[in-house]
Length: 287
Image 1 (cartoon, one colour):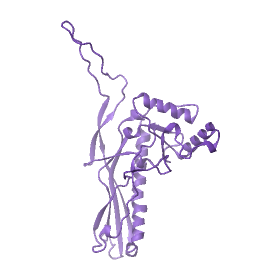
Image 2 (cartoon, one colour):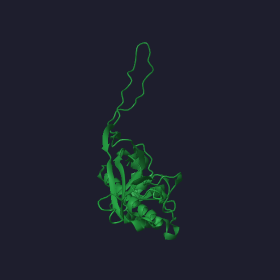
Image 3 (spheres, rainbow, N blue to C red):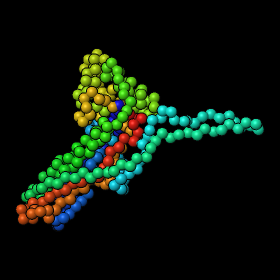
Image 4 (tube, rainbow, N blue to C red):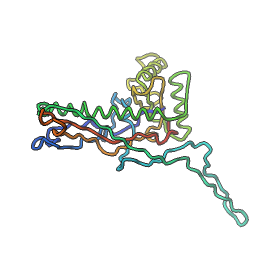
């Protein structure tokens, strides 16, 4: 189980005609659009301070320079040898200092390219407001949705400690204890909107009614990541900043050209957006 980590957030960046170089040179120009992810110095809580809506906005980002990356993945600490106390040596006795073991492996993660093509007319291109909205809504948000799906699939494919309880609140509290017993701090609760609505109702009942429920309710003090891609009935509590990462090869780009197939003859332009990323669970013990 886990809760949303506080991430840096910023409004998505819009493109203008000049950003494409369209003022003077409308053909075969390209311009980086910027990160697909929320990234300003301000801490963003989309629902008024409670949490974030979507895994892609809460996951830790890490920039890489290649198409694959080697990373250390934490293993189970069970049975690992740990530091031990030793007596001061004297003239007759020297106590051997213990060796320790690091429960970790090195794995290679291959970044995959995510891309999309869309066609627009020359008339549309002349409307800078339309292009700005089109790029942000249709292209960049489409990439975000697919990246969010990939993060959810990687998360759900992992193996974690299974914690239960007689109620949502009891199960969440037990999960917090499970995370903390392994030396991590429970930060976020991640779950399906339907489950989180039931948790709110359970909290309201415990407090004596809906009127007693704070608008920015945070179960057991956890932040919340609400994502419909998490199956109903599954909740994750974790030190989210340590548990999972999104490797990002480059910033999202949008390119425009009229040289695709018969675009020039038909007064059409083709927009191409792409980014290269990989999601990975680096520390399942923190979940």
